[in-house]
Image 1 (cartoon, helix red, strand yellow):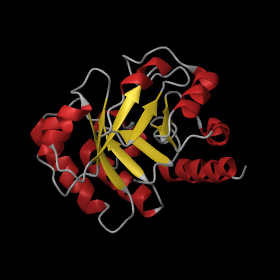
Image 2 (tube, helix red, strand yellow):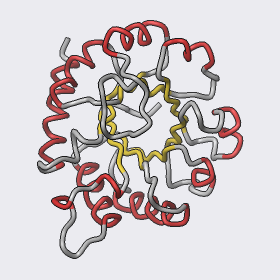
Image 3 (cartoon, one colour):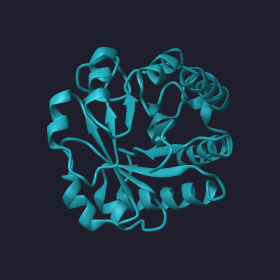
Length: 221
């Protein structure tokens, strides 16, 4: 099972003008940023690209894989089973939502070495987790502006109940700031997934250093 502690999600559409150098387009800038984060210890990057087609996504995955080849980072694709089926040896994780293809069906279409993550938004969904799922993304924990169709926030208490009801690793997601991270690890999460905590008006690498520092603080319990 992959290390899930620091889990960064983004697509080219999430980049701000301050993230893109003059000679870059958003795809190139994303590859550069993810490569730098991977070199500094990022555990997982999930590509969630909603604004480009499958062929462009596959090209982007190839570039991301090359940029992070000599690091420990695991590369994930969000939702897109078709892309995952064509990316043997390039991606490590396929992450699915409740409205996507069922994990058991997706598993038949992808390389068997690819791990599967599944999003859940409430504790009742724990009753229908197939054995092929390797970890759960749980949230949103807090209100979030990064996902237009996000469910209502579940809060820390429900998150703790979910952690106590399953042996699967839990990655908390949704509205998580750098200041929340140590408390979430103290609750027992295996990882935190962030977008805007890394991609904001400040330097992504500096944000990531703060994230790692707070993960260490949260694990010291």
